[in-house]
Image 1 (cartoon, rainbow, N blue to C red):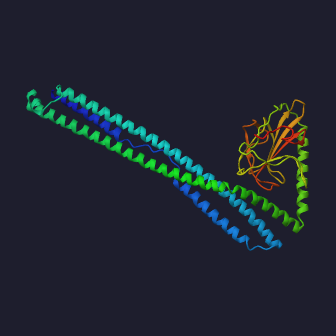
Image 2 (image 1 turned 60 degrees about the vertical axis):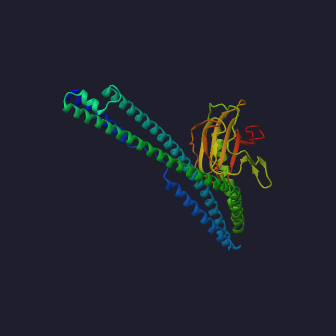
Image 3 (image 1 turned 90 degrees about the horizontal axis):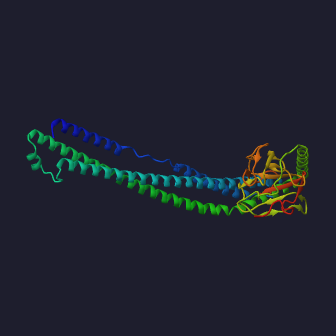
Length: 410
């Protein structure tokens, strides 16, 4: 091999080594994960809410039967309701954060496995090139320094060849060592991530257990709602304001009836399809049926069940939102949908009352039966606890949703 050839070969070797070194030195990409402090914040929030709950319970023990004490009791009961609602929300948020964290860790482990495979492939490529170069230089595959000396006419060429071989061997050996080191580093990282995932899974299992215990308090929450409502009624009767509130409720309902009557005079080109979906898919129980009760007439079907608070409410059939109301005095947050005319030419409408917060649909919006979410189950307005008050109206008049076959319990 002449000097110019040896030089070109040396440059190629170093270029290859440099390129390989750059590939090996590329930083690992880290997938984003949910910050641990977000989960910790929720833990702290739950702890604070539990402490607040204890203080509320303690403060109620010393209350008497006078009006001031009863007013304080109603206030404390309402605070306890809000406290439990916040606890439920905090638990759900925390578990959601942990779910995201686990998903991020799974993705990270997959990325690390891919990187390890890439490094292994790179090492194999380096070894293959080394073998080819050694075979090309030695031709015999066992090229000693003496053989190279005898095959070289000039001692200067012998020194050059020897230096090239030493350079190539040392640099390639360094590359292999570097690849091996990176592979060990990635394997170590994967072990760390898997250990972290195990901890996250343990945390999630713990939180699921705690949430299960909290879900068991939904019954207590319902009782608390009823207790707060009954205490409010008792206080109003003692203060002489109960009849005034009932008159206000009646007036609010009468005004709504007039609005519905006006809606009936508007034209519609829609046709009711003859089928309604159950409006709260997550809950199957009925707590109060349509019809006359001992002290009042109930114009709809109340859907209730443990853990119903904040469960999605869906449109029972295709139609158009004709009312989307925030905080009606009686119905609370509610939605009314016009489904068009049935086969007998009657106008069919449905109403969904006591939503947890403002409806998620707006007036004039088209909805799809069984799919469009209208809002979340709550206890706003004149309500004794979380439930959906569901009405079906035929030409404006309330009918029995179950008895008339509009909805069937799933």
